[in-house]
Amino acid sequence: MKRFKYILILLFLAASITSCHKSSEVSNIFIGYDYFPLKQGSWILYKVDSVFYSPFGTDSSSWLMKEVIDSIYTDGQGVTNGIVKRYSTSAENPAWNIPPVVWNVSLSSITAEKVEDNIRYVKLEFPIKNGLKWNGNYYNGEPEQVFTYKWINQGGIIGNFVFDSLLKVNQQDFSTLISKDFSEEVYAVGIGSVYIHKEHLSNLLASKTGYTYNAEIIDWSD
Image (tube, rainbow, N blue to C red; front, top):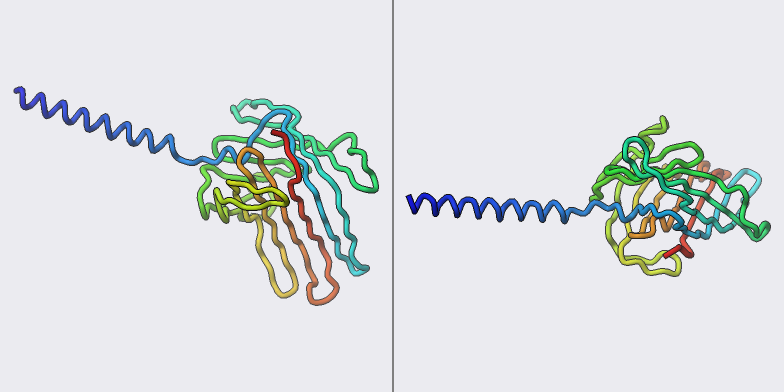
């Protein structure tokens, strides 16, 4: 009987250790929410450069853009939402535009989403892992656009800053001999989006049309 009780005690201890080990593994799974922080009052300042191509020539422009998380609220599904106010200014008009453009962002347990000009995009999907693919247009009725993670938690340089942990999302990469559609976005832990690049061009062998767009972080709130 004593031996039987001893065996039961050993089995119980082994089960407890295994349970604790599994619990520890679960708690250490990387989700990636820190790449899309929502904090009231936080802001990011970007330098933006864009070039428009038409049969009549090219038109280049540069400006500053500031995105501020003006307020935070929780909706009926328990999802954290943020009201984003986007301000812009340029050399020609140095004052910030008033009223600003108002957008919305949301962070749930499985996605990070952003509503831009009344179009909702699934910016990130959780948990983050290499090669994960999803439809960035899932909620907006537009044709499917496959987003995927190119690299995760890599150090790198964006503008004048060195970041320890960056996440690159490839949003579109399609090209032919006469057209190119490419877009990508890079996120930094604790900050959010720090770099956006888009190219939508056609008639590459003749009179080029379309545009390129580049937004790069130059400052942010602590």
